[in-house]
Image 1 (cartoon, rainbow, N blue to C red):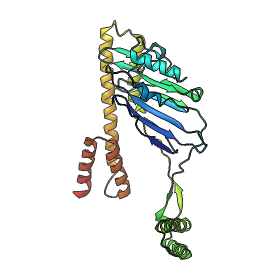
Image 2 (tube, rainbow, N blue to C red):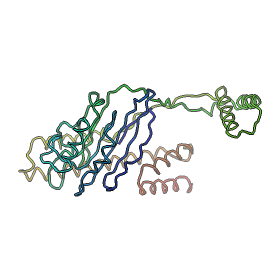
Image 3 (cartoon, rainbow, N blue to C red):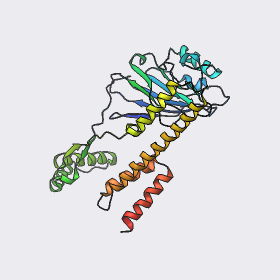
Image 4 (cartoon, rainbow, N blue to C red):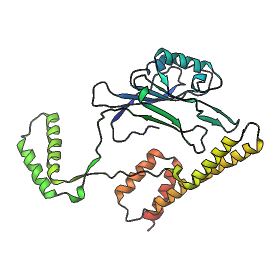
Length: 322
């Protein structure tokens, strides 16, 4: 997951791997300074018998680049107890390109079935960014892969997004019409369609600047599920169990750990359900259509079919049945 706020970035095309096993997502954080962009790639390779596609990977090892993901590559250099061919190939490629691993040996994966841990989630940085990077594993909720917090304390002048919007509710439409007519009269019509389209857009924005006030969106801090006190107690209980018992030799402790993990998952689902109900309660027939459409778009983009199905029937019941 990439958290990019108030900066411009562009997606990078997926790498072309003939073996089809290597998956990638990439972005470039755009800088106003020449040759100061930062590339971030998220990679995944399933745990099969195929070797790493080194030819495809090699093209990603460029300046100002961070590579992260689960390649199912094992090596003692980043905390694994054993090594495999994929890990040795990745270690050799990183050394050849002078890239450095941010991993500090902390395991990032726990198998609930076999009660084993390993360091599978890797973060590799180019040497120019490495001194500015920090890396740590944080508390997890249910998943067998732990979340990893990667911070890059690097000064980059990006194309900022000021989140300025037009406040049409306070617009002076009479003044806007007057300004627009004046702008259009200044530019006689020609047969150059592209130029006319540019002039038309410029005239609209110029007229709006004096008649439609502008402002900034309020920045709100999202509510994170992990902030729940009940969930924090369960996480602390599980951490204490992991620290105080050797689970490999203690069957009762393993059973207790499985119970706590199940309780954490139930609590997590309960919190999400409660948040969903609170959201639905905050909406009624007086809710502006713009807010409803924004919510519908987010659901269409970010949720499963089940979430969209529930929202559709809630909407039908609260709006069409009245």
